[in-house]
Image 1 (cartoon, protein in one colour):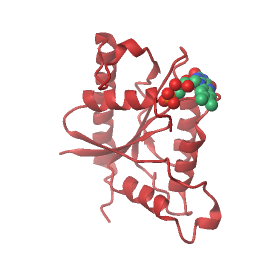
Image 2 (cartoon, helix red, strand yellow; image 1 turned 135 degrees about the vertical axis):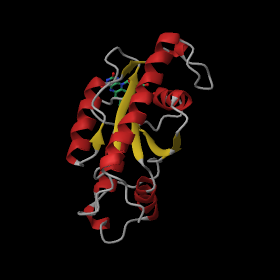
Image 3 (cartoon, helix red, strand yellow; image 1 turned 60 degrees about the vertical axis):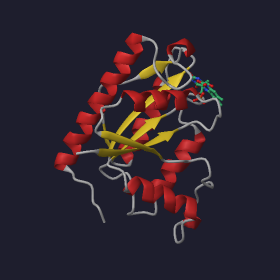
Image 4 (cartoon, protein in one colour; image 1 turned 30 degrees about the horizontal axis):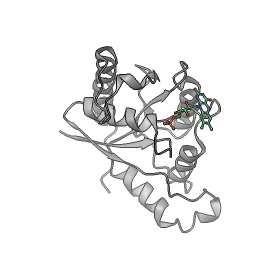
Length: 190
Ligand code: FNR
């Protein structure tokens, strides 16, 4: 059984350390996880005025989540919270009312910062949002990554053995979490 994981990168930066982290995580994940990015860059700002007719970018977002067995959020911390672009994407996906794309979906949260706090505060904000959206979050292990550039090669390979082991274990736990959730709550293929 292969699980399809849609991943969100919460940064729009062309030099994003969280995109490097996402690449590293994909490289270290168990072989039965398959990854595709769920883009957030081109979404307009959400308004309930769109609920009757979502724009194509938002339809694509909801279709992508529907096609995923699980979602992974790899995000920076902005001003001790979630980057606006990511929150906007979550707001789109959670609506229209009654069509929340995150309902019961297996999910995990991770993030990197250049400071030692490692996105801990942003992750708590994101967890609260995902909790309200009824996602089935992996609660442990937590992963607050203090990004050290020397730990990663240009292609996203992790060169620090301790970091590699930590990230590999994190993804193995996520794989088991997905399996546990889907055993009880299979995803609809409608
Ligand atoms: C930051 N940064 C930051 N770092 C942190 O640890 N806590 C914070 O609250 C913030 N706030 C913040 C706000 C804004 C608007 C920016 C642009 C940056 C620094 C941040 O960790 C750093 O820029 C990372 O490189 C962001 O991740 P990406 O975009 O490189 O993936």
